[in-house]
Length: 607
Image (tube, rainbow, N blue to C red; front, side, top):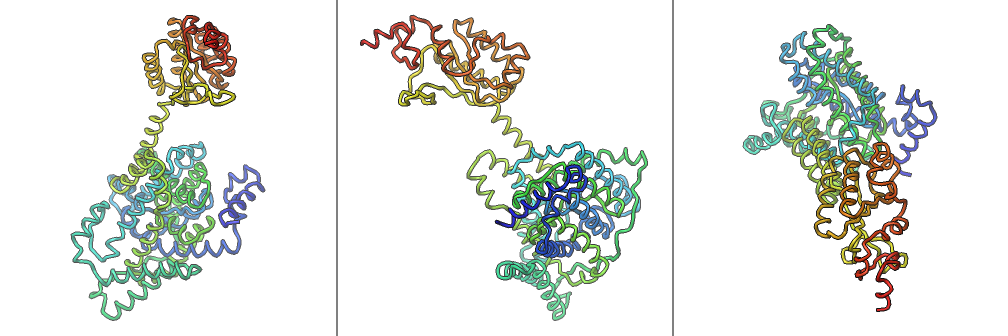
């Protein structure tokens, strides 16, 4: 049995061994049976890698958010632990992110000076409010909202975000001074224009780190390749700086970081502040949840794991509420850390717990050693992470399988690169819904005729076989709702114009799963129109839910109870005797068994 199947089985066993209410209150009970000596080792190494990686990132994210540098590290400790224990994903790591930091800055910079005490207090309050909204949405079981994020949206979003991760590290990989806040295409254009200014020493350290990571992953899979790559890059940078001097090499390091555990903090619960931040809190909540669940679903698909959207909402909410009291600003699922966590071999959510706890230890004990970690090495590590996030296999499958899904993937991918992240996901979701509505609004109308080659004369769709000149048989595949009524009406109008003698219409309703008032009204009107023309509308094998709707609205009386049948045989036996005898007398097709009893059958048999 594969490790993934073993973990899934263990998780299911654990879930069944405890009461449901307890599993909802303490969701980590569900996956705890997965933990063993092997998973502990894998999770510890993945957590250690994540704790080291978040050091420079946390400082950078805090700067983007307008917060003091240490707050970016604090946001990666308590929120990561709480979200891992109360979420549902095995690999999602919560903490500060580039997008969330940008949202925080844009929301709060109009109210206070970035970096000031008032600004920090507003950020803590915003974080608490976001947590409360996330928790309320989870308890209200609104996690099903993420079901509207299709697999193609997730794949496209992940691939686009992977390129953004790599694009943000280009300046560190090549040692270029780039303006902050460039879009992806602007970064590439800037690199092209400044190609002659590339720092070969910095690029050499980055390439060495990249190659060391790839080599370790290929030939020494038991050794954490990312930590190995970091050590290789740090040693190479130290040698070059010692030999030539940092002024010559231009190799910059992360620098010593402030030590100390996250101090306790208190949000501002005044009514004026809450009113002031309410719009920003709602927008930040929607974005943070979308980002977190998108990442969780993306990694869950690759790990064959089901993601509970409601539980993820609850985990994110509790993490931000707790983080606001431990000097953490808005945290959500991190593409960098989650992708790194997955690539580093994490097996259970304990990896994120280890990452948060180890980060606290790293801040206290090892933060000064960050002075030896070059930015170029960090850039190379994130290049590896970005490459691993692009799901080439599923991208190829989507392109092969469906033009519509390819369009969704492409729109989400390019929107991620060129628009804000929240708009990218929204664009993919909206396009998915539009294409779905367009598809469901055009149910198929398939003509059906008996197959003369079959002993049982089974009904088939074959345009080469003859039809009855008076009776048309159709199978309607799809829901008959307000959006589909016009398409079905137009299709039937064309059938009437092409075959005016086919005044009788028999519909096989096995494919109608849902009908609304508009659909019921249409059937009633069609029945009246055909009766007025001397024909009739007949329904075969109507599903109970559809029949209940017709009964409840009184439409069944308009259609006619005697015109709704349980099967084709009884329907044909009832309808064919009502057909025009003069037309039957001259008919040569006679495709139904019942036609043998119609006028002219004996003469044609003798002929």
